[in-house]
Each structure stands twice: as C-alpha cells, then as structure tokens.
Image 1 (tube, rainbow, N blue to C red):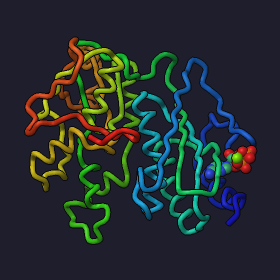
Image 2 (cartoon, rainbow, N blue to C red):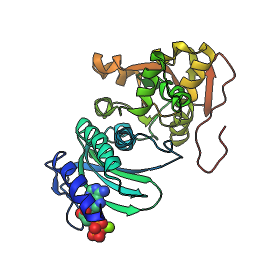
Image 3 (cartoon, helix red, strand yellow):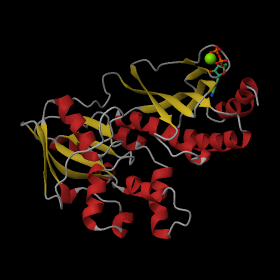
Image 4 (cartoon, rainbow, N blue to C red):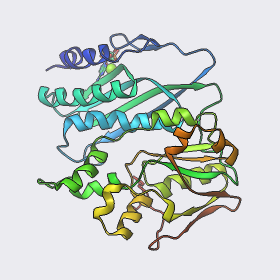
Length: 316
Ligand code: ADP
Ligand code: MG
C-alpha cells in the first residue's frame, strides 16, 4: 500500500465514522478546520508513543490503536475538557495492511467511545512511532489546571490504582491465568475519565491524570500550586485484581505504578459538598493539602519513595 492508498483506504473511512459538527474540514485538505464555540477555550495536547519505550515490540495493533488515543484523551479529562477531535501522525516501518486494519479498528473504537473525530494527520516511514494531538473545549477560564490547589483542600483519586502496572509482568506470558486477565485488560484498554473530568470542571481546584504513578503525579500538583500534602496510604484505593499479590507489593503498585489513567484532584470541602452524589462516589479522599511544601505519606506498609518515569533521568 502506498501512502495515499493507505490514507484513502484506512484513515478516510475512520474519519467518516468519527464526525464532529465542530469539524468544518477533516482529512483531505492542507489543514483541518475546527470551529470554536464562542466563550470556550481550546484545550490541546500531543502525546507520542514509541515502540519498545511506551509499548512492547510486536504489540497487538488493535490494543495500540485504542491505547494511542486513550492516553492522549486522558489529558483532556485531566483538564475537565469536552473532547472534540484529534490528529494522528503515524510513522511505520512498513504499510502492512493486516496491521493497519487492526490498528484502525482499535483507534475507531476509542474515537467513538471518547467522542473524538479524526481531523487529519501525517503518514511517514520509519521506526514505529505514533503521535496523537487531541483537541477539547472548556468554558472560558474553566480548565482544571495543576496550579490551583489550596491548603485545606481534600486530595482525591478516582477509581482504583495499580492494575495496569501489575499487568506489566504478564505482558510476555503466553498462558495468562484468569486472575491476571483483568489486570491485562486495564493495561491494554485504559479508560480516560472524560465524564468525571467534565463533572469536576468548575469545582475541583486542581487536577492531573495518573500516568506516571499517584505520588509522582500528585507531586506535580503540589509543585505547581506551591503547597504540600499529607496522604494516608491506607486510604488509597487498590484495584481488586491486585488481591492476588502480596499486600505490601499491591500498595506499592497503587502508590507508584503508572498507566492507570485515573484522575488525582484537589477540591475544597465546600466544593466537595457541591458535587453530585454520583460524582462523589467515583472519588476517594486520600489526604489533605497542607501549607508546608512536600508530600508526607502516612500508614504506608513499607518505606515508599516517590518514583515515576523520567525519559532522561534515572528511574527511581
Ligand atoms: P500535506 O503534504 O499537505 O501535509 P499530506 O500528504 O501529509 O498533506 O496528507 C494529505 C491529507 O491526508 C491531509 O489532509 C492529512 O491530514 C491527511 N492524512 C495524512 N495522514 C493521515 C493519517 N494518518 N490520518 C488521518 N489523516 C491523514
Ligand atoms: Mg504531510
């Protein structure tokens, strides 16, 4: 398949099945055109996935299609934005139609699930690398940023943590026991918290998505906001599937494991009261923002240094 056949056969149909009224021009011209809602801010972000770094070599293309959009959409969730559209820059070693069909299937499922229309992209030859730029909207001035946490706010996290990082040790295993299949599903098909992010828009004081690990990502909020936090490790919600692990290990994965794509948010006690009961039910209060800088972790089962992934640093 040549570059233009590939675009015509794979990506134009995908654009047709993922439309948005705001997208005045999708793939096919020199640029896409997005109409911005008056009174809204455009919120956008780009994420790159490199084979062997962000996903295993010979990774299933359908999982990769889902994952490449899900991790980018998670940043929109963390800003409280409503998803609109995305562009896709795909670098491929070969144009294998079987691989591309699988990739497009996963990408289409994710685009439809998240309400993101394919607006355009770029297709080049080289080592397998995927960049996805996502566009969303929030009411003007209303984006959930990292720098708004205030002393006295609750620190909350959505869902449960640890499953995706626990799955890493099962990725290369041929016969996976049933207990580990739930873990693998969390790794292969991350679910960005788009509805929750929008429900928190206007109420939460700060937010971040948990991509590198809860403690590492919370630290980004603390540094941006110039505050500290006291977190109770016993309150951190651990994925049920981690019951198969030793409790100390399960807690360590929930605190420092990456790839869960839950939201970590701060919210004032009054803000908490304003949330609907169903939104509150999606969050667990795990600690409090303090005036003194630094992250104090209490009740951890083992000494837990904050670690996260740094591409140009040492992994702690
Ligand atoms: P240009 O040379 O003007 O940059 P290209 O030849 O790269 O244009 O792309 C032609 C059209 O196909 C553009 O509208 C572009 O957005 C679209 N396109 C290219 N690759 C992809 C892709 N992987 N997914 C979606 N649209 C794509
Ligand atoms: Mg081009």
